[in-house]
Image 1 (cartoon, rainbow, N blue to C red):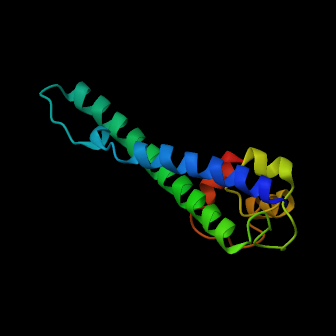
Image 2 (cartoon, rainbow, N blue to C red):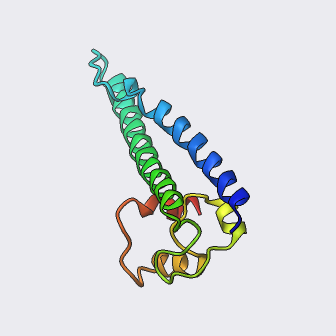
Image 3 (cartoon, rainbow, N blue to C red):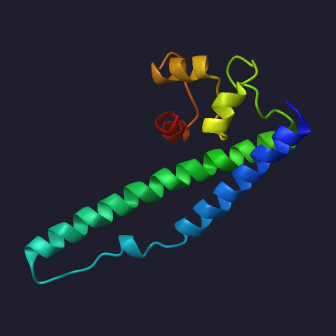
Length: 126
């Protein structure tokens, strides 16, 4: 992978990190509100649950983005963390924070090897 390509992915990852960090600061949607109407309270609980799930998903994605930036810094970016083969550029373009080549990602999806926590989001995003 050329330095130009690495710089491109680094810029993409830094932009995604900034976007996610800004979004994670807003936690107003998970505030517990009480209302006299039971139906309103059920609706608010559903909205709160959705906000919590979104927060969890975005936190995992942010963790994966930060991990990719660490791999750029240490020179291991673009190399599958399972088989140590180069990850194809097309895959990096689609999921720049990926840790695995497509073959190993498919194996991880089938639970053929144990993956680190936080990879679930990557599996969904791929």
